[in-house]
Image (tube, rainbow, N blue to C red; front, side, top):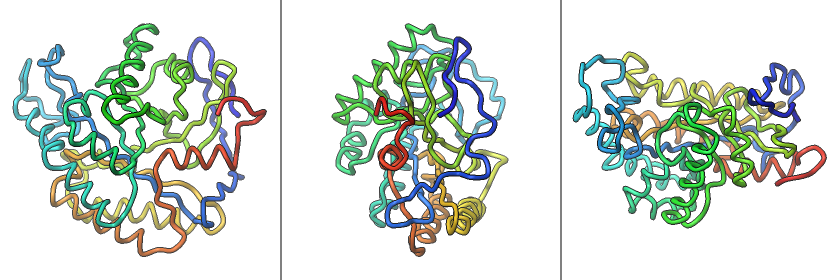
Length: 311
């Protein structure tokens, strides 16, 4: 277990598992665990209608363009709306048709604004890795403000999906206080890390906390303008990542994170690449496609926190 965070936040660890990572012993002897993060953010982004100075354009077709618009950007708003109106339902069909699970990386406010989607998440028994109440930058908030935002998000999800989130991943990255506040709030695991392909334990306020790392590499953020352009390019990135880890998994199994945003991967020409990738992985034996909470529960059982403590 890595060192406890101090007043400057979590300690850095450049070594990790090094050359001898533990055997995760994935269920059924799987060579790889694949987990899909469906980012549900539409309706929780920065917007003048919610008191922000301007419309956010992150992960839209206009990202990186200087439109010169102060205040509401109606074009960007409609690109977000595509995600909740069309894109998310297409992605959910791809998973449902193949009987595959997913994790909802959900902003609480987004689910409040699309009750049918919250209902679908409950029906699918998807787990929740909370993306916060709405988009914010925790490092700009006081400790008390961040604590209140975490509590508000948890209370909201209890109403919309009927339970608190299992995990947490800040939309714009954590503050130096976030991990302590998540432990305080009883969040089971933290995904605000991009530094490994296996879960690991850290010590936070004298308690063990499980980190289930995420990735921005095998993520449709690569599809923003001037990034990957075609379904085949997206497929190649995902397929090659899977094939490499599957090959290594004969002796050293790992996990593969796939990040999806309905307003990006939900468009037809991009969803086609995802569909081909889903068919590629399901054609292989010894693959565990699972929810993020399943990985956390498995790790706690096979590799419990050193010295016991909080579960």
